[in-house]
Image (cartoon, rainbow, N blue to C red; front, side, top):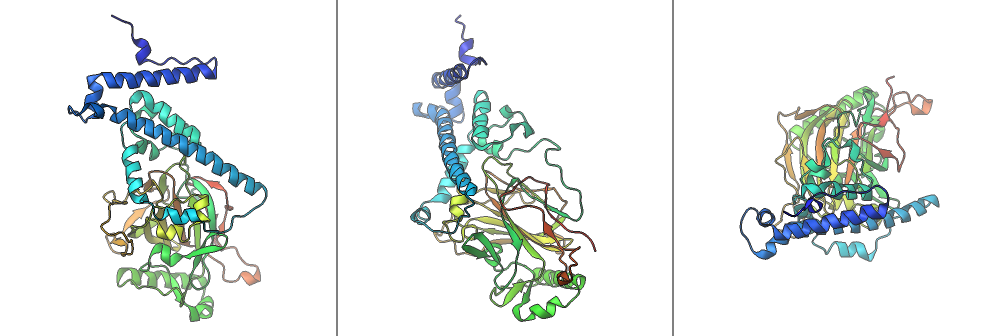
Amino acid sequence: MKFRASHRVCIFSHSTHLNSLHNQRRCFASFLKKLHKTPQARSFSNGGGGGSKGDSFLLPGATVATLLMLGALHVRRMYDDRKVEEALEKGTEFEFQPDVKSTFLRLLPLRSISRCWGLLTSVEIPVSLRPYVYGAWARAFHSNLEEAALPLDEYTSLREFFVRTLKEGSRPIDPDPRCLVSPVDGTVLRFGELRGAGAMIEQVKGFSYSVFSLLGASSFLPLIAKGDVHEESSEPENASREKSKKSWLRVSLASPKVWDPVSTCPIKGLFYCVIYLKPGDYHRIHAPADWNVLVRRHFSGCLLPVNERATRTIRNLYVENERVVLEGLWKEGFMALAAVGATNIGSIELSIEPELRTNQARKKLLHSEPPEERIYEPDGIGRTLKKGDEVAAFNMGSTVVLVFQAPISLSQENGDSSSEFRFSVQRGDRVRVGEALGRWRDQ
């Protein structure tokens, strides 16, 4: 009997980097040769049946395509990161400037491409190759594999690896009750207070979009009439907050109203924060506070990319993309979280509603249909979440937009701002789940 251990076990020498690369290449080539020759491999790739001879290459073909995709993404990421770093070093802030590429992207079948990518990442990877594939991904996108809850060889596909859970204690939640924590790992793009008619959120310098467009025309965003701004500001803070909370419940549970953004303004103390998740980040979304989720709204839109270049070249990027919006109440009033999809990230999975399916094939080419909405039972309570509870997951990186009420001081002109909410992050900061986005103090 011939000794064939060299075909089954890869032994890596730690003496030089060249020997390591040579052995990895030889191991991978041997695996592909065996996969073609053995009937077991053919049976596996054909789903257990005796298909055609060409089908025996299905599994290795998918694996090679995945590795090539990882390589292309890595090269593009390094190029983009270098350009951004050079600009930041010069103190340059990118402005909105649409280009031909953004117009071309709208013509591509990005939803279908994303579904194909989803099928590709669902292909089972051979156990012997899993550490190398996941390790290549981690090196390309700076993922911390030491935090993974399971050994790498237990993640059967890239899809499982993308949405992996973390070891217990990897993301401690700030216990301060007067603190709002980050729902995701990511980079803070924009934050601020919503003011004035239209309630605009800045996408990039030179272009903004309406929070009404993001959350939907039937959103229960707490608003006041434009002519009542001065009258409302004269009310005590606690009375104003309680009044807005009651009116919001009455609208949300009775007859939702389509708000006119021109004639209405957000009430004082309404804030937003936009956080971008890179492909290498932890992809699960957690509750930023104790939160009662009352409504879920699913917008079946485009799947345009949401990277830095896209935000400064594509108008209404987050408004046009497919997204899932959760709205509800926390102890300070209104809170909404929008999980925005992107190219290759059409699948947004809700922990509180596992049956929800996103990026499904559509009969209509246009996406002008109203969002699919669900009101969680029981009325007025919905789904109760504790700070840090898991809410949803992306299959790769994307963007989360958080809109929320928070305490403010109505006597800031006297220098008394002890109860005012203040962000504790800066634009461009890296945040992790459980870290404080902002704090306030009781008067």
